[in-house]
Length: 133
Length: 133
DNA sequence: CTACTTGCAAAACCTTTGCATGATC
DNA sequence: GATCATGCAAAGGTTTTGCAAGTAG
Image (cartoon, rainbow over the protein chains, first blue to last red):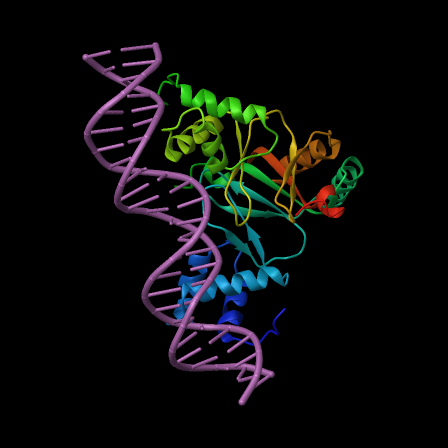
């Protein structure tokens, strides 16, 4: 692996990611960081997001039919995806049961399970009360 | 929603999907069905896969960094994704904790959870014993 | 004959890559 | 000064769309 060098752009991306709960796309991050670095390019954002994901300082959330979303909260947690407005909400509860699930799966499966990920789908409260859209 | 009309292409796609455990991509399905329908287009495959997914006769599996995969097995089950060879394996065993986690999630969350999905990542047995690649 | 489906090509969309320049160590 | 990071533009891969022609009900 190549040695990591400091970059102000990367710091800005990381700091924005840690400051928001919005689970932004690369493009949203790009537009934000652009305020501070008007010349930054989308490619730099993508490169740094992949880098941060690789070293465990960000999480990439891949969803059907839309751009990847990124999360600066890297402590174990699950996600809820609102199929109505696209909002992603962090769900912090239930980590122990997740451990159990992984254990059960490991016992019933030939290969080696290294991680698992639950995503919940449905409607967020805003969309239920029609405050959304 | 528009009324559904029979199409031989759609039947071929569905039947292929139900006959394989390989979780093929749209392109793989296209190449397969092309044997029977040499003039079929990739667009038709995509349109029908989306249609089948919408009416619950197929499942779309979205993975980071690669094309969507499709599953003709629509009874509730989870997936294992081998990060080494890309193989997807259906996990049929029952995980009681999953019920629990869904219940807890529903209680701890404002919105309405309609479904949940767990994907396991790791190495399949073939890749562990280096039979793979 | 009306509405759905197809094939084709083009477009849309998201993400990565090549390369010369610039920054960090 | 060697190596890594950036910006730009171009390419890559996947999926969708517009449209005219074909097919099912």
